[in-house]
Image 1 (cartoon, rainbow, N blue to C red):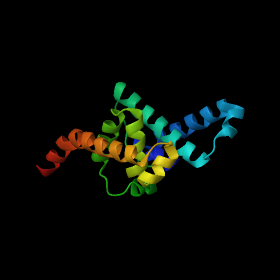
Image 2: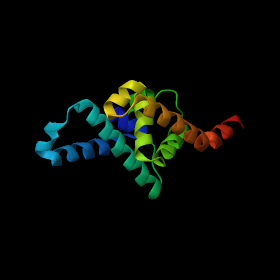
Image 3: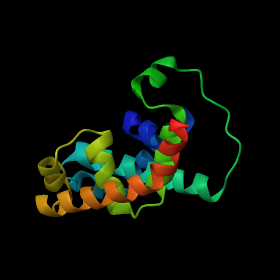
Length: 152
């Protein structure tokens, strides 16, 4: 869950806030929490949604953030994405509707296949593929200025 939240929010503090939010929501559900069939899927989806909420809040309430250099292993775990691209992707994801953002995160940040996502969400594989395709097109438009500036 932490890696999922970190990949979306881009920093350790926000990822920790996401975990706390998810567990508080789960605790508030109380007895209903045991009714969750696939706990791993539920927690992963809850982390994605909470991380997107944090990212949207950050966009609506801009502030100067200090870089988090305390955990070098997390920086390495993100992969080859440069910090600027990761931030641009986070901003673009935050502008999406919740379902497409969730499906995109499951597919490309968490590495699940379309059939796995369809099963997790209880929707058809065709719908997942359509949403992935449309979301990629939207994100491509949003991130195009970033990639153009990299060429310069």
